[in-house]
Length: 211
Image (cartoon, rainbow, N blue to C red; front, side, top):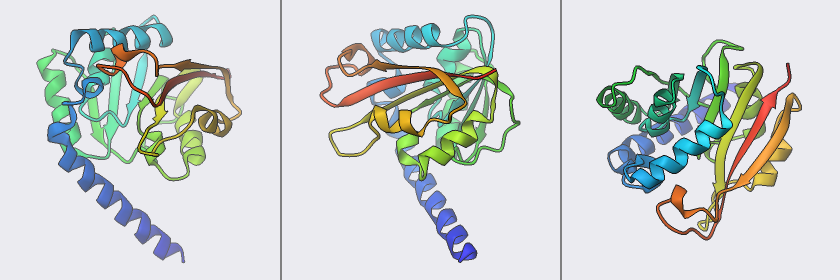
């Protein structure tokens, strides 16, 4: 039974990797992915700046995709590590960092089971990934172990018109008890983040790890 489950998990990872590898070339065409529009980029920059440490910090960008947020974080003066399951995404992210003149560590890695040092990061950022992972409550518990005591935890998620995603309350109920100061910001009514108006549920959640 254990071997069958392991085999199923590996097959799912392979399929997911292939899906995102195939999507990588066009990924940045979405305004909130590529951040090519200065107003969209500015909105995300201000959100990250407001919610993350004001001094230089070690930040993990989980499911970094093509690295747009990673670059913004580095431009804000942070030491950034970005991980993603897709080699194609990571390749584009690395090129984007070089083009921006930023030194960022990118690694191909399964975000559901990150192989990183415990209590290593001052902050963790994840955008639009948790909804796609199995057993999100368990994933959240693994992620929290990567934070230093007092570290900041930031998720950007949504529940889209397609029926995919997670409602904010679902995530709040799944957050580990070690997280405090939980805040939710509705992003649905702020078109500057998305390059236009949206009609579904989009939000950011932040919390702090107990010291």
